[in-house]
Image 1: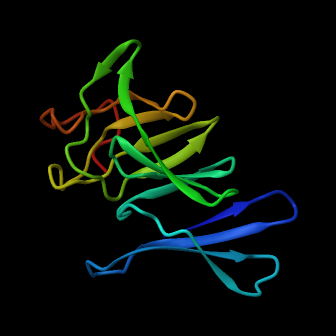
Image 2: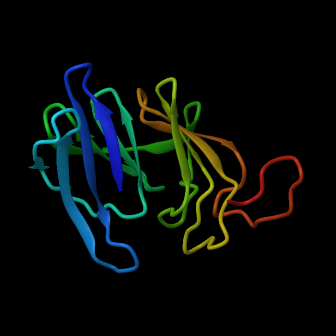
Length: 165
């Protein structure tokens, strides 16, 4: 896994970590390279949590690891420390059942207007994929279901939305 992060016009970072391809070996180390200078890699604080099958979204000075878990790991890129936030699915004041039974793999993640959107992804419960679409609000740390079926509901053929991915 790798992502680039810009700290304005003076500094651009490149950070990597994750899982070795086709093995069960995981890496918790995170490395930084200034893409303007390209002089040397510098090791950042290792992730205290396992992070496989996750997507990284950078917003402001924070990197969010999204993997379909109520615990979202956050790396503060400026102060170089890890944190973990507890999230929930909510509909207004009502807390909903967590829709993903297992961690996701192959899900699509995008950041737009301060919110993270997640679509699809497979898990051990749904190896063929999912059509579930959700929004994560970075201000409230709440998830909102937008469309599709959670892992707890049986899949059925639909013609009014994208199929499982």
